[in-house]
Length: 195
Image 1 (cartoon, rainbow, N blue to C red):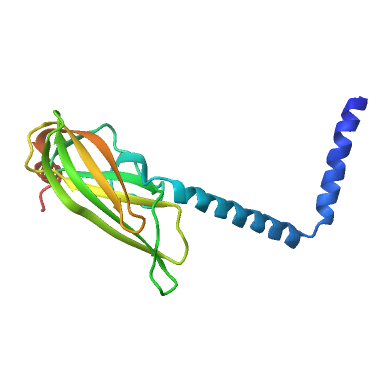
Image 2 (image 1 turned 90 degrees about the vertical axis):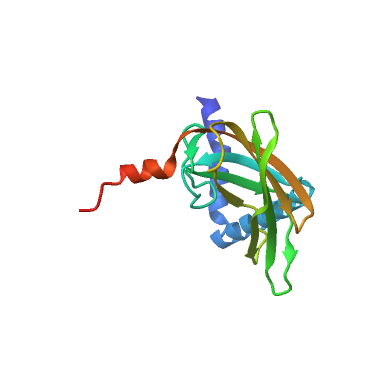
């Protein structure tokens, strides 16, 4: 019994002391701690390589950071839109001189066959200039592709990201399988004829 009263007593003192501190002072202390933590994070960020993470095939374009519906499996019919969600870390910012900063991200796309040979490519498949008045640390891209002229089989979508503001690059691959069947024909046959 005495052990319990000893454990509760310091806790009661701590709670009593916390209640004596005005709420705005607690908020200011928390905000100061948050700002210090953010500055430390920005220092770590500057040392990060350009990084692609949470690369996910999705059922459509992402609605926001982390807000997407994963695609079941990795199969797509010829002509079916392919959506890839990716979070990007370690990029730099360009000062635009007007109080805004820009993330300048480009992506090249290479289509690799099962043997790893490039069968198609498109430079600057995506070009993004994301402006803000803050150094944003939560950036995502939705990379869309539609493959219409390729035989069924295993492929990889190989993306090469370029950070024009920070002078960094990274490459990542997404395995997919094209299956027989025309997506446009499948979607039009699923639509009932007009009356």
